Image 1 (tube, rainbow, N blue to C red):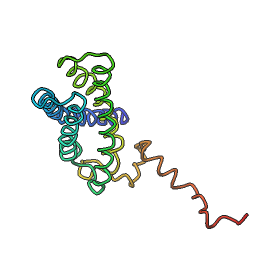
Image 2: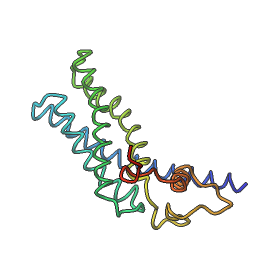
Image 3: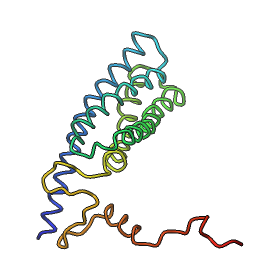
Image 4: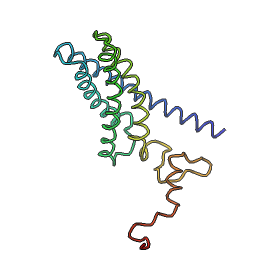
Length: 190
């Protein structure tokens, strides 16, 4: 019974997180679509270049929204590392997103504005968003404690005996218990 309640609470937490991530993403989507179409239609830029500019603007918007709203309670002491990871995974998402545009526009020769928007802002953005949600919650904002959420505890604090430790907390504990490898300077001469 306690396991079901814990599972329900965890699923509610993920649902709230996904809703916030989706709201930030919706705002980023608007930025992405508007900047893309202004670059292509008004500025006459090439579709792929416009896609990169638009996605870059959306990445900046999304970092601010995710850092200061979706994941605001997460540990902020590692923000430089977090920002670097965010940019890296956003770059991978940009390749996924604009890769769909490149395949459609240059590979399949679907060059109408509608085809470009569908390829980039529906197919590419959908696939890129799934990747980003997974990577941000796993690698960027997932490490560290949720400093002010009720019932949260630092990652270094073990789970109570009645609560099974999540894998992410259990693995470092197992690794820490193993003997360290000898350093090259302490190994016997051959």
